[in-house]
Image 1: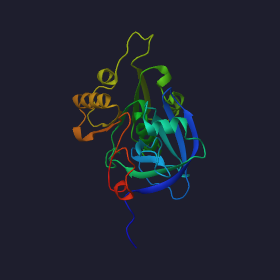
Image 2: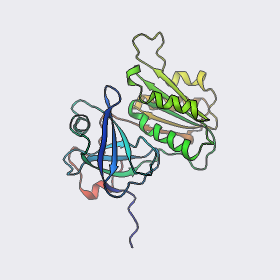
Image 3: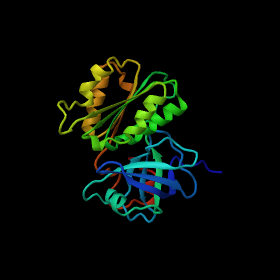
Image 4: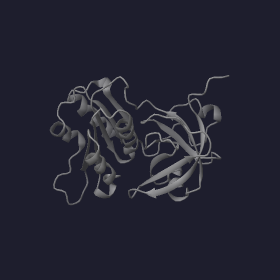
Length: 258
């Protein structure tokens, strides 16, 4: 018997699609056959069953579940064919393909120290999956989730995370708004880290979101004592293109990372 592929194509069906911010749609997908195995922090490639829509990469926004349901957060990009399809055409019952899993934005199983999750926009997807996985499987590791949004309307899952902070020992939830019209201060996470958390020696840090945000967070974390090897980054581009505008052949789809 041949060894299983490291990644493969998995048919899924849309269970629900809802707008969670003015520009981000959350999909819940259920497997039509085999469940795609993955670890919190990894991502998959999404497209329609006929490969007419360009494949795009999206991080799973939940830890693996017994029923195989996967959540994705998709930011709408003007003139972006895949995100436009998700926002305006893909409805419950729609058929999609997930290819994967990919990525190494995952915790070190040997580490026991606290975890800091820094996220902006749809970069919350892997951070939420990591938080779920750590709280469910490694509850002894303290987890802090620090989310950056432009305005209050852009904050995703505030009530869920506040509930976790109130009911789960070792979980802390922080939010900063960088463009709230009526705010006196509009602080950014890299500027807030010294006063909010201080020394990050021994912490495992994950930063996910736009490139500038990720770079700034990583630099700030290292300056506060986090070991460079313990600072993980995942940059989210407006319309990630792992290959070209043309749907790749099956051979390329199974051999190319993001």
